[in-house]
Image 1 (cartoon, rainbow, N blue to C red):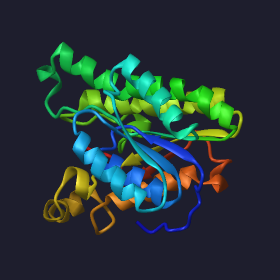
Image 2: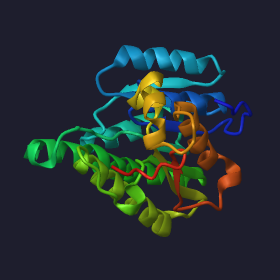
Image 3: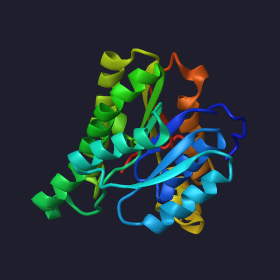
Length: 254
């Protein structure tokens, strides 16, 4: 990650789904920028503890809280416990998003309900729970993690419910931006494309780059982290309701 300046010293952040993957990298990026961070895990506590220990190496406080963000009551408790642990909350990163790769006709009712609850529901309930804390702080940043093509409700084979959920996240974000951007709170979306550490090995990404990416290198978690940090910076206070594609120019086509 390229950002080393302590832009967020004293800020307090919660990143849902941050025991591994992009969520972990985002939380570590916030810590590097000076923010105290809560790492959230669903089932991998040890991984979250290791990530939190790495965050403390940047001289910030780091906490670990378990919760299944797809459950309304659990995600509300998570936000409350995070604010209590840190003494407040200014930054919320809604990273959780349930996923299943199969044809629409093969999804069960339970698959669909789980994906929507873990994508739209998790984002909505976490944001609603965070709003009083952000208002109390008088400064807030909510950054939601979407997906390439979500901002135009693009269809894609194999991940229909997941992408539908991410499209709803984009719409919700813009609605929150219209209704709740007081006390210095902003709401924005980062839409990652195919990211090496999350989706593909470097070899696989390199072999597919001509099909998926006009930029001649695979995306990395650092690309996503830098975009998230951009929205969190104090200097980004007039950017609200924006959707930033971090895709190398790939538009999410099937």
